[in-house]
Amino acid sequence: MISNRLLFAIFLAIVFYLNSCYSFRGISIDRNVTTYYVENFKNNASNALPAMEQLFTESLKEKIRTDTRLIYNDETPDIEFRGTVVDFRISSEAPQPGELVAINRLTIVLGVEFINHQDDEKNWRSNFSHFFDFSSSTDFASVQDEAVEAIRLQLMEDIFNRAFTDW
Image 1 (cartoon, rainbow, N blue to C red):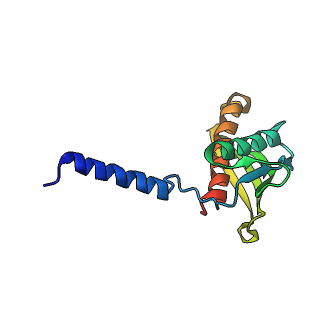
Image 2 (cartoon, rainbow, N blue to C red):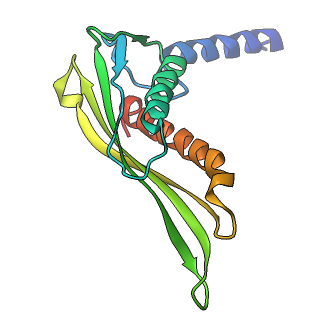
């Protein structure tokens, strides 16, 4: 009969083995890729808030720095990101009887180009969009920070997943 200690030791060995073979986060980065660069985003959205391009540039740099082993390199990176703030708009949603609307929606669209200098077949361009709904009785200025932050977090997650988890 196998003792509980031996079973526990076997269990721990299996867990450590699996942890070294598989990333539980699902990140897939080639071993030859060690550096990244994020070019400053451009702003092509006519209504975007000031410094929106800087916010997204720094957010993507930070997301990659904290969630991968990659090192920032602005001279000869293995992978590179280029981005543009394509759209920043507030639209009326959920019409009510009469001329009123119940909800306004802030939508931000980013265009991102991913360049893999190690493997050209992994290059891509894509638009990423996310929105934040708020009551039409609420002034946008009062929810602006919360809305932009919620959208920023989701956009960074979407861009990161496209680049590093092969979705």
